[in-house]
Image (cartoon, rainbow, N blue to C red; front, side, top):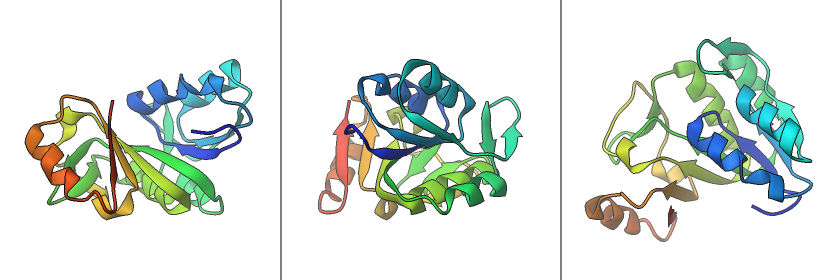
Length: 166
């Protein structure tokens, strides 16, 4: 991430951890549907924070659904950071919530570069609603517990996908 970037930051515990790294950057514009992320950035950074409106997803501290997705549509961002509940090579990236999937798709569509954040425990899992395929993202960011088999498969996409293991 660079100073002055415009970014879309999806909801989730992983994206909140990313948000905690952002105060060192200056001049960011951050669009998010996550109340905790918006609050943290408002209190701890100089970022311009745009909160997507809509229906609050009860128990998850975020907005979701068509209102939030439609609010995202007119924006063009440099980078989107999307979280996923599950991933399989056959079914792509998925989430249990159709409403949350709408927002994720809108963020992906608005971004010049799409970064998927997913921990290795969510690999080879399928949730209810697919929102993206490997071809829809530019970089996959995961942890170092990713299996050697999954790494090998992902390395086969190296012409179109950057793999970052942190």
